Image (cartoon, rainbow, N blue to C red; front, side, top):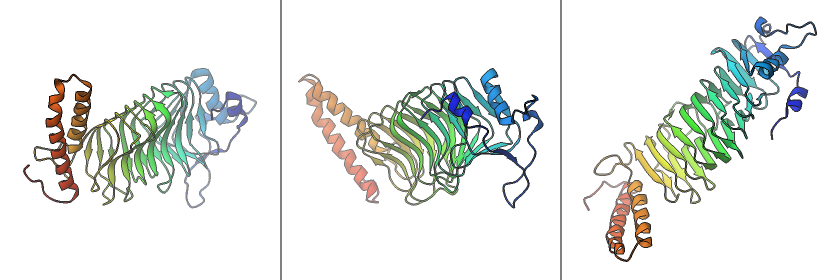
Length: 341
């Protein structure tokens, strides 16, 4: 649900504190002088932040740790910039909500003690850059991108820690792009695409440090299609971790990724293009996963069916190749070595 400007204003003044330390009952530090209200009406400093957003489109928060009972809500053409040593902690909810066209947050560390940390909701050309996103005890979602009408946004150089799901694209999130998103201590999913369309992921890595056994690198569900994941690395460490899991309703997605998980991929999508490079699944000729050839051949078979009678002569050879490669996959999943065929 989008928050209106009036709703956002009525929610203030909210409890936003600069904290010297979060443990041991330490005393609250004073509000930074640069954020103190300058007017005689004693405008509180959080109102000053919103005033800067409204008038200038940019608000800058200096170093310090701040607890928020209500998240910062960014409307159209508003950008929140944090110092590298600034931390915002959402109490009982997100730290930041982006809900306006070209709304953006950059820098610092964004945390939440429960639920979603950063929520992108129904906006165009949104941006999340150069920040750390951190949950609590592998719960909640680090970055939730939720439609409808959530298009053309981007996240870049983002580190995500201690959440159940690092990035979730859902409810018709469409045509967004992600660059160098890195995950640590992931509970269930690094990337979760649920009814998501034409999104692109470039690079990034999920590190094994603290990642829970059984975690999935990329899950594609609920009719997601035309998404692309390129150069993503997955090294979770757990014996039951699976890099890629596509359900039967997903189709026409592309995956060219670096896999270092023990459990094999579960590929049920239709007309997907998949290359998994890694040590677990090797073809005799290199590191291209056999399912790539299977999908390609299936596509060729379907194309032959739709072509002229003359072209149908090639169908027999294609079906033989398909059966041969499927047999090779069976050898892999049964733990046997490849044999000549």
